[in-house]
Image (cartoon, rainbow, N blue to C red; front, side, top):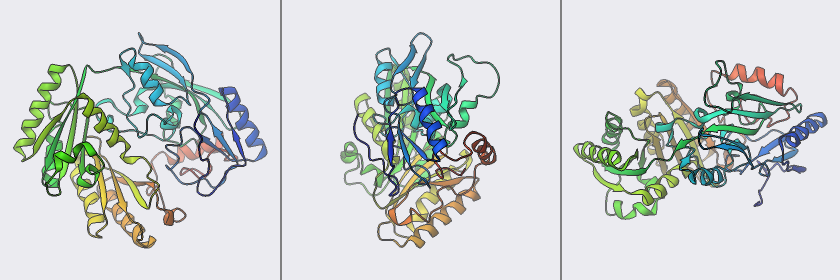
Length: 424
């Protein structure tokens, strides 16, 4: 097990606990709560930058020792694992049976299943397969008072009713610590290939994104990115050599070889009609490209501000325009990635040396624009100068009152991840 730096926002725990079972997690939480200590759960550490820094930090709860496969039924397309198992290890196991979890978060080799679900991680595959929450059948969670509770089922067909485990998805561990997860899995597609299309300006690229989702095309992932993102992908250097600044669209297709080729040809035709140059990537290059794109939202730990924006599908054109405009009018270098079809985008502003008040003003402008089209903007990575004074969330989600009520009931002492989410 590789070493982790357990410090967060200059806070360092006085104790590190490394449980190897759900009962040990529950006991650790019960003891910490009784002692008035604050516990920060850890997996691979790839998502600790999400949310606000903790207001208190006494115990680091390292869950990586809980990495066992509890049950795997390839015939039933269901797997149960401990929450400390990495997504990379699970994918290797599933691939031996021609299966996979269609999840593509950043840094999958290190990211643990519990951490991914607790932080609501998702990537470009969300277009074709939905978010990880859609593949989660049930889980076991340890509450702050030491109780272990189960929700959901270990089968795909479940009884009617609300699945309480979904309350923990995206809650950043503030309602309890995920210790076990049951997921449905999918057969691996026979073929995966990508069409790259270069456009001279944003409007043509956004129009192409709309055309690439019209029947019979069914991409499993579809992104638009500016040339600052492309520079991060060495494999694209030849493709973009000598070209002016532009927008690139990547459309990924999966299925039988014949079905994929038909869709690639039709997608290339539609893009060419909008003035694009296109190139097709076969499997090996396709895999490398999408790993890099998924890693765009991984922490860089430099003086950059990473913002995730979202808006209804009908407002994607305006969302893309504002993602471009806000840094451009300030002459700030920025990299932009739009997860087309799901209304989510990421923009990273290089703001080293920019006064904090100017950074906050730009963020306020972006948030106001997003609210105007029914969207929002959440800060995922923060420059050092802004750690203490920035509002990471903006508008409160509709579920906030429910989350606060559950927090008061399940963790009244605020022992787990205090201050991390909008709940105390």
